[in-house]
Image (cartoon, rainbow, N blue to C red; front, top):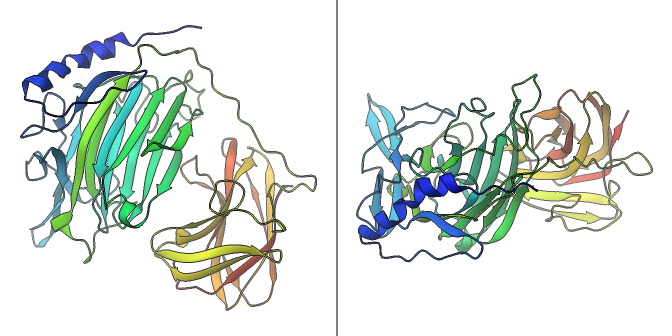
Length: 449
């Protein structure tokens, strides 16, 4: 097996370590077994260390329809009490609300290839706030512009629901992504206290952790110009990347701030950033073969579609019940039915959601979705087959159905025209539209036609 020592990256950034000591560094960065410390920042100085970090200014609307201007002002990025603080500020310009914030990057200063990144941070609460700890390649043009270049998102959180943290990789053309989430409520939420986020980036595998708990493992990705052959695996995650942190305001994912957003507390606090690296990494890796689930003897890809077996609806096996963005409710399997009760429909259609993943979607094949459903009062429900690993595109488009108090059988046919995917996901979305009537579902099938 070919083994490669990552020497150049160590030489590039190891020179930074004595600089921190000369600056009167107080915090002793811990060692990790099996790793050597490549570089770290404990933010013990009086200002941001510009030998490690860059300000990255941008005008409003630079990306994702975000509202903030990223500035170089120490009002937006500063060090206080041993922490780097990125602060979003609401002002007024030309008679309209105007927002400034900060984005810092390690590009061309602390780039590295492969390693373990450990960051302790506390996120702010507030509609429209979007803090992130993420990584981008030093040379974004090497494989092509985003998403072909690859992106590693160690942590993202939305200020309107800081009980959930997201870890994601983006890649490919067409755009693909793989995402894991972790939920912590109450005094453990991501805005209530500091949490430690980490990623172990190795040739052929990327693992994300929150407080030491594994959130997501990725080992199947690609980079390609659309319509051309894939670049040799493990592209694009086989090139130097850098760490960056920012606090966005508004945008297509979090939505814009509203009257409830408290900008006096809109501070993203980072206690430390630590980057470790093994002495060597095995770069002789091969892309894993996709495993596609087989249908049952009756041709149904859905497991427990007749709800004859009780199961844990909070794990990632078979059926899973999910709540987001203000959705409140519960689900249970009883008397051969899935019964979903809601007390708050939330702000999104997916705020109250029942899903089953791992459905094999093969390009050129045709599929049929069938189920029986009713509600205690007339209401709506949205059904689709989505692609969590492919940018949430729809193989079966979002389809609104009108439920009555009588059982109805619904059937939907679709053709799979996208790239093969072993993780299609059937979704019943029951949020947003003011509907909270109890829903009953049974006899769910997804089959090839």
